[in-house]
Image (cartoon, rainbow, N blue to C red; front, side):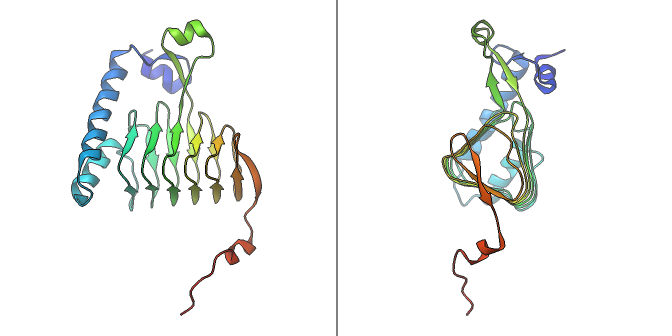
Length: 197
């Protein structure tokens, strides 16, 4: 079993010294660098490079510069995916986003974690656990989502939250660690004024 196979199967794997994984990360780092070095108005070039980084990116995506990820090939997005400035996705395992996901600046999605045992950790062993995000999810600024987390549909994760466990559908969740604050209700449609002109 290769180190890549071990990571996909949820076993500790050698992320630091395995040449196959180093090569895949280097390829992705180069593509991210090319993406981040483009002028913001080079729309077609930006879209083409992003499709090389994330082959399974849905229609209607917008990813603001700078953007970074480890492999890109483990990321999947639905339609209307928006990632604001400084989005980082450490996709050692699958990181899946549904439709209509909006990510504010400085958010981190890390499917990679280090071994708890110091001997294993010092050998460069890591664990990779998938992250799954449903449809119509909004992440406030500076959110961190940790390995193995599932987030339901129609969820708001408040700014600065550290998501360490699953979050159900239809809620606002905030904090470190992130906890459900309340359900999203019909009354929330009245929160902000709507121009009726």
